[in-house]
Length: 354
Image (cartoon, rainbow, N blue to C red; front, top):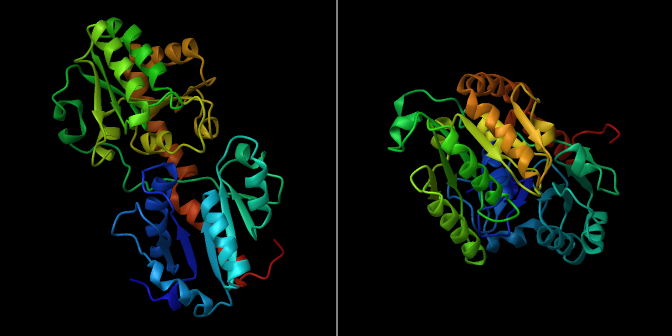
């Protein structure tokens, strides 16, 4: 555990359940630590290997860290922004507040008020930045290209799964209407009878609120006689091997914040078909790494998927190009470097004009 004196950046995480923000923190914080940044998380729902500070250590924040007059409180949610404002403005702790915004919509009045109190704001894409009414820096998310990498042996193929067919197409993430899981299932019910070499897998949490939605999808699959070829994996302990086993990844979200899963798939050497929700359109090189279709447009999604199911060789080539595209444009190191510049400016280590 880091001494509070060595912590210059705090990454609060005020949510227990896995989310896109959680995935970002899990990948990003260790990389920032490897670069020598004294960074610690605060809150539940994160794995034990991340550097953490405890709630009982909060009084130590009244004292500045070594080598800087303040610390950075890097919030990613409304409740984290509010807590930072209380610490800085009510308890007078020496903090600079930073917010990362991934929202692809107009913010509520409450959120706009919180954002107005920040010392700096980062947008995860040009699109999310377009909804901000304050000066901001665009720093796109990246992925760890060592953790997410192409397959290396038979354990990274469909043969290791016991599932039928020669090729896998997958859709990962929470199972709900927002994520477009129903659009994927509908496309698979229509397409798989035409392409017997393909099997579909779906992985992700089904909350009690969305259990009925998932049950209806499974009933539709059973009625089509495709229960052995459209398989719900549930939540898996390690999703990375499943990316490597895929020949095609589909992200059919109706709306999204940023959305890391296409980058994770592409880093794994897998072609991607996505909607234009979130930052997906900024990730995909049309007809090179995959295809982008309008969010919620079932016919366009189905037809884009069909291209790759009809030509596994095209999917393989797109996967190869995808890997290099992520290495060149979305490596996690790029995000780390961008944030370091923002941190240094807030900590007073960079006297350049923002």
